[in-house]
Image (cartoon, rainbow, N blue to C red; front, side, top):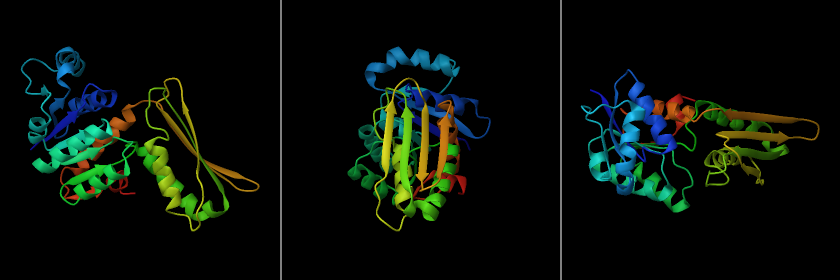
Length: 252
């Protein structure tokens, strides 16, 4: 049986990238539905269908009805905004559907709601779906536990000028990883740039008295996040309720 996928915000940069990879995938995943605001459907549908190579006989549906779209899927992939993510979360709970969350910028209250939802449905939440970033998180974990207590620690990130959250969700994930592996309280310095069209660069720098260690990751194309999302949806498709991360999906 195919894994039916729903993508809210399918006209967004990440939505369309994920949809393209679903359409190209030759395994058992199927693009079942995309969700858009009602005022965007008429203008966007033809463009999206053309971009995806969808013909008139396809049963793929673009709708403004979030409830119906989610009820007809197996896994929902969310790369939208925090306030809309909460609506997606509620519909997935109501319809007992699996959810992959790549949205960032959640409030503490919203994060708590996601954690509670993980007791009802399978959820994979990641601030960054990149395989490389998640490997870097493991390296940062090791460096923090080894030398974090005796280092000055800086997180330097560079993103495109349209990115809303600052620091980025990925930078905050690095900060959490560092703090969880220190034995002393320490301020982590964030340095954020929002210029140009940079997909995403991150550097975590541990500075000691006479040397420094830098862990770098550069994103050349948003496709890396879409590729991670495809891996995530396949992995979670047969999982029971719980709140998972990309580390689980990658067996890190």
